[in-house]
Amino acid sequence: MTSTLHKLYGHSLALLTDLYQLTMAHGYWKSGVAERRAAFHLFFRKNPFKGGYALACGLQHAVEYVENFRFTRSDLDYLATLRGNDDGPLFESGFLDYLDQMGFSCDVDAMPEGTVAFAHEPLVRVRGPIIQGQLLETPLLNMINYSTLIATKAARICQATRGGPVLELGLRRAQGTDGGITASRAAYIGGCIGTSNVLAGKLFGIPVKGTHAHSWVMSFADERESFDVYAQAMPNNCIFLVDTYDTLEGVKNAIAVGDKLRRRGHEMVGIRLDSGDLAHFSIKARQLLDQAGFVDAKIVASNDLDEHIIDSLIGQGAAIGVWGVGTKLATAYDQPALGAVYKLAAVENNNGNNHAGWDYRIKLSEQPIKISNPGILQVRRLSQSGRFSADMIYCQDSGPESGVADPTGSTEIYDINDPTLIHKIVQHDDEVDLLVPIFRNGQRVYDLPDLETVRSHAGDQLSRLDGRIKRFSNPQIYPVGLGRTLHRRKQALIARARGQLKE
Image: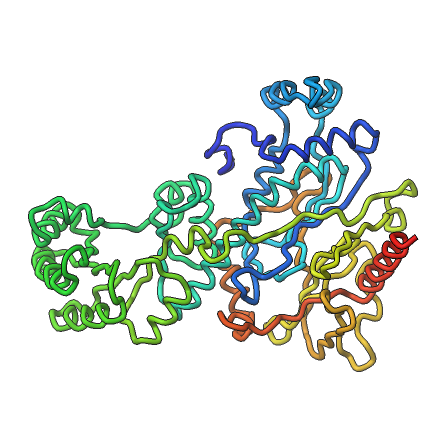
């Protein structure tokens, strides 16, 4: 089956990376440690949009990328042209030969797309030869960062409509071709019912929606004529854009043409408002449509909407049935990047492959939020009666922690940003580990679900999250912390590293 990435690009994406990944890879090769095993984690440090959660997304493209990860002759020929500051070749020919023969052999684990995730939790874990794990950093971040951001934004917007349908209309404002395609897919996973993006419809099977724009109306002598001609040309797709000149007169013109459609055996789908006081005009339009017998006609609203504006419009009693959201969804207008990072957490020593053979690594910072978590990590989600209670990040290489529950029966997790704070999760009746096997020794072992399954999973995940955590303003903080063993390991490594720095 041809991957979406191949359909879009039709060539190798091995060079979709930052140069420093390749210079580090050259260094690993040159120093003889390229095959040394290491563990990396991809995670974000703050929940996006000042919210309480994120919706993991982008795994399908990441899997397709990894599955086809190899350097072509064209890639290697290009790398051979790069020069250092002495005008000599940047990369030795032996290194390029190594890349030519390199076969992917890492283990990759990840949260399935549509899983609710929180700050500091690994979305992806890569374990294998350090050179391969390093080379995956930039492309994985590229594919997971943006998709997760847009899926989360879409989930927030869909929440704001209280169940009202949302259309993603952002292609014309998206950051380039790939941004538009990626945004349409992620928005559908986040809860949108369709997109205006026809290529996304073809690639992913997303329902496509759209009728006409202001230019259609303006190309005719008057608005009524433009509606008449459109109704004759597209009688089964009539949502009339009514605000080109006078909005309420536009509604009346749509009703008149809707009457003609009905007499010809068709039905006007509705009208669209794209400017002005959407609350006021939607209420007035609803009255006019109902009085004329078009009680099923939808009122579609657009015009730079986001979750905050939608929430306000609903609070004002707006009679809007469908929400068209473009710029502020496809561009994640109020937060342009998720800020996910990819950090080394362990390297194998010379003692073997069991957990005793791993040396754990930690990145220090004066900011606690930027101190990384060492080890080979897993995320365990605790639930009570189907509702999410808390998440524990723990050391998978040590196995499920003994003594996780204290004598009272509660589970202790240590706050990441304040190690003196211990969260006691008193009740839970279910536990599940969120990172699932995707690749083993370079071979895919995970069946990619279809898009509808991913979208359904996202909806189920969001339904199991407490509403207070989904608030737009001052959301309640969902408990995420370190297991006891990981907490102690982290504190010991911090103390050791800072002790060394003082010597």
